[in-house]
Amino acid sequence: MSDNVYILGTGMIRFNKYPEKNIKQMTAEAMADLFEDVAIDQKDIEAAWFSNAGWGIYDGQHCIRGQVALAPLGIQGLPITNVENACAGGATALHSAWMAVKAGAYDIALAIGSEKIFTATERQKMFDGFLSGTDVEFSRAMIANFQADAKKKAEEAGEKGEEKEGGHSGFMDIYAMGARLHMQAYGTTQEQLAIIASKNRHNGSLNPMAQYQKDMSVEEVLADKLVAYPLTRAMCAPIGDGAAAALVCSERALKKYPDARPVRIRASALASGCLPDSGLETIGKRASKTVYEMAGLGPDDLDVVEVHDATAYGELMQYEELGLCEAGGGGPHAESGATRLDGKQPVNPSGGLECRGHPIGASGLAQVYELVHQLRGDAGPRQVSGARIAMAENGGGFIGLGEAAMAIHIMEKL
Image (tube, helix red, strand yellow):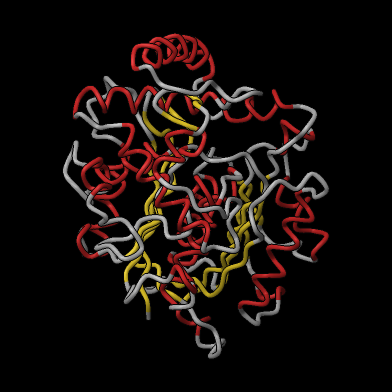
């Protein structure tokens, strides 16, 4: 058993729309970047976990996805586990690799996610892919009600803008319903959501790996096209493609790479969601309690955080779930400036899913890529000063109005 487990290196390609690239190509590029980050012979990788959600939907590659993507790179013959956990797949792959190294089964393990979502000719497949991360039967009925309610609320509020052409993911309707319920319960405002989105737009403008690199003011976010009230387009993650990877190692293996710049995984947890009548706490509260207890830390100890913000409301919700502020205090917390790069506890310095992008199976590992660079102190103009403890929260899918899966990691600078 390994007492300490480390992230030895990371790799990533810029998230974007890549109609000319396939899963194999993006996987190869992310691995090439990983090998530039840490000088390791790929033959030293003992096991791999490969995250992907939609390859089967788009190209019929329903099985052996990791073997197909990694074999052309010479990564073959070793144990490869294929991971599908909706949007939490990347972090689930990392949790699995961490667990295997922690248990002493391997000294060096790979977690990698590669996802192709964008297609200019089969748009419905994109939306079907997102919907498949829910209880599909339940979601179809619920979304129809959401859309009718959102239209009514927007008309009553006199909101400007119309839904963008081409439709949108059903996840946006679920997030919009959650946002409206939060507004009713706590007085949260659309402007507070715009403050979060504007903050992330600024961070994304400083990140060369982000899909969106254009700064936007709060007013510009509010004036953008309406997706589902109260969410405008600038408050929602874009559709795109990408790949990201992390190499996990034991303390024994770490000694072989004196030139590496590792960070320690201080805690890792994976949880599943529940139905409203289960009697369980929400998934975010349960998973964060687990990692806080494992790490011997609390929310106030975190210097920088990456959360799963498929929408601005998703980020606001995680402020509360992770204990960064009190229940119902997410809106005022955003207004206070605490989550800005120069704030008390910066959130999503990468720009988050809203700006960095959200190729489903790769998103969780992109969070880790960002935080590793933050802890190393080489994140450039978006560097969080003095960052020593970081958290990555990656949610996936929906059961009712809550995430179906969630993996959280706490990492520490050496």
